[in-house]
Image (tube, rainbow, N blue to C red; front, side):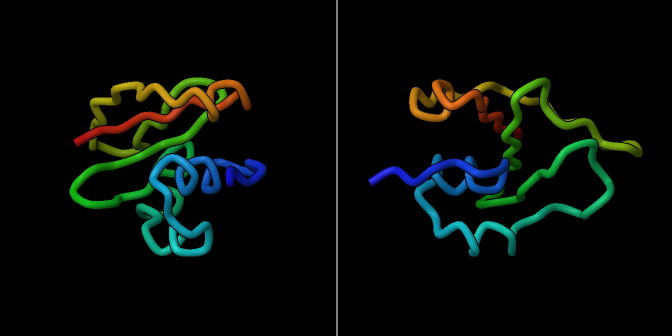
Length: 82
């Protein structure tokens, strides 16, 4: 059963079918990006209602939007970068 999406972390967890609390362990360097980014299985993930995260320093993400009907109807977009 799909749970209510409360925040960006929950959107990532829902998309990857992970426990919400577990996803926080994968948070990419806090403060280094304009939005929360999670490093999971050799990929970076970002959930947003606007544009994907940008790195504040020198790293570039090559974001690709992933279709997720449930998250899209709740106002979120999921992006993945390798």
